[in-house]
Length: 188
Image (cartoon, rainbow, N blue to C red):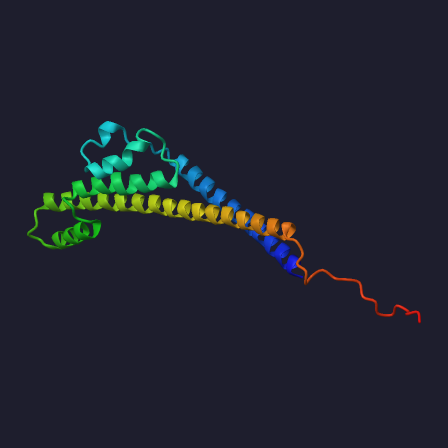
C-alpha cells in the first residue's frame, strides 16, 4: 500500500515537474520573441557615461546587445529609461509634470512657450512610463517563467528521490508474510 502511494506521488510530481518546465520555457520563449520584434539594442558605453554609477554598473554586462530577455528589460527600464526621464524632468515624475502642465494650461497668464515645453515634457514622460511598464511586465513574466522552471526542476528531483526510495526500500520484518499452517492435517 505504501509503495503504491509513493509511486503515485512520484508520478504526480513527474507530471507537475514536466508541466512547470513547459510553462517556464514557454514564458521565456514568448517574452524573448516579443522583445526581439521590437529590435531594441542596449546602449553602448558612450550612451551611459552620464548616468549614475549604479546604473552604469547594471547596464555594463549588456552593452550593445539585443534587448531579448526579461533581466535585460528590467535593467533597461530601471537604469536607462528611468534615469533619462528623471534627468529630463529634474527628478519630477509624469504625474507631477502632468499636474503642472494642467494647471499652467488653464492659467491665462501662463507663458505659452513654457506651457508648450511642459506639454512636450509631459508627453516624453508618458511615453517613457509606458515603455517602462511594458518592459517591466515582460520582466515579470520572465521571472514567473523562471520560478516555474525552478519549481519544475525541484518537482522532478523530488519525484526521482521518491521513486528511488520506493524501489530501493527493503521490506521490513512486519511486512514479510510467513506461510501459515492452518488447515494442515496433523498425524497422531
